[in-house]
Image (tube, rainbow, N blue to C red; front, side, top):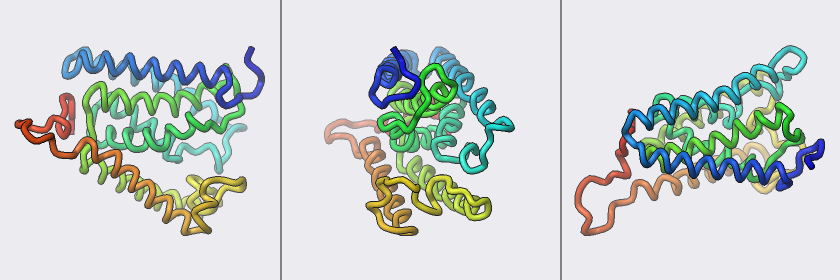
Length: 245
């Protein structure tokens, strides 16, 4: 029986993890089998429609008058932008949106899945929105990369770093003007967090940025290293089928 409050690694959390893992596995298999065909286009577009149907109406619902809070409701966290990039990448397979989905999805959106900060239990709309946004973004990153072959290179890395830097500058300015703290760019959270280890503001932002840039470089390297000696021909890791620049 499900309770009224979500419990990390309780029945509903485990069920969601199983569903997400099964969905990712199925999409990767189907994507590999159909790569560079119209079937792959239909599969990608169909997934995008389902993704959008699960997220957009609930985003609108939670921003209706009476529920809107300028400090919480605006979809300007990186995880909010990640699911939008994911849907764009599914529909267009553009390299820039696939890059954002890969880096943001596999390092940022995955954190709320493994360490959820959620009170609402299924079938509360907040539960559905939370897991649709974060979970399907990660699944999309896996599907695009290992299923459809949209693999990142150093150009993708530069796009992600530049986009994230632009986001940080913009949101920092908005926070300062509106008295908000999106992204914890202007102050640490009130409760204890990993940011406490990184020192006071603004040093924790500097340390966090350096860590993210380093981790993203590590996530890029496997796709860009030279092929083993003796294997001639073009390195398919840099230009995969279906890559639409």
